[in-house]
Length: 312
Image (tube, rainbow, N blue to C red; front, side, top):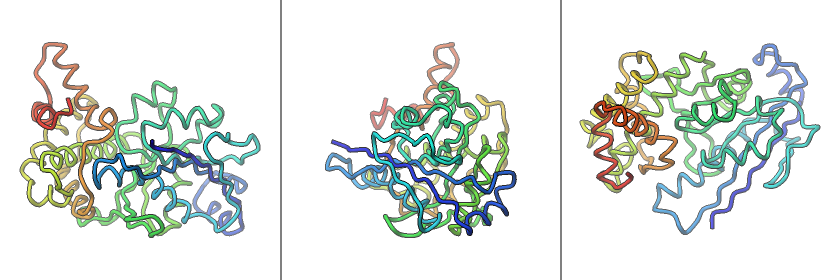
């Protein structure tokens, strides 16, 4: 059985960190200290190959990387079942867990601290956030990779985006950007509109590349970009059109090349359609809505390929 343990890291406000805050955190008081909440997901013999194992340990790997970017001492770790202490300092709470475990994070966090949560999850969080009264919550699009536990993160800088792709949104975005930059990573602080477009681009990336890869068992992200480029290009165009129409926005030109460039940067990643309701499921919900209204499917290729691999 999969075991989940979520931990909370309360950072000490050492002199070095306070100086970093004074320089980067803008209006955040020097006494404020970041808090990290993570779910450590152990591996399991029930996994479906390397892709499943990678996705299960990624929360722990991400959290460990974030820990390494903070101070060297003064951290308080709380395990599953332990609540955030009432005396815990104010500051961001970095949520590094599977999307399906997010309800548990809220249950274990006092509601007064919900505005401090910073969500690192991939996928479409908006419907869930809105259902919890968390519209406008802090979020991070993490475009960096850690190959295994304990190794330093590698920034997702690409030939199409040499300035880096990682981005943060919300009141705690400057604090999170400071932490990542302290670890040698890039991170932009974006407004809501700019973040929405970049979030949707990443959703399109993970939905398109994982689905095309699933059609070709064993294909890595790099193989999809190199060997099945025409398939993924068609799917990117279809999903982008559907997302733009749904959200009433216009994407910047060059999306396909940006997403393919990122795929080349993380070419070794395995592919699998996972966490359906948070990823491909959002696009399929647009299909269901259109069909219920007697309209054409906005994502016919996506729908056909989901049926092909028996996801729907």
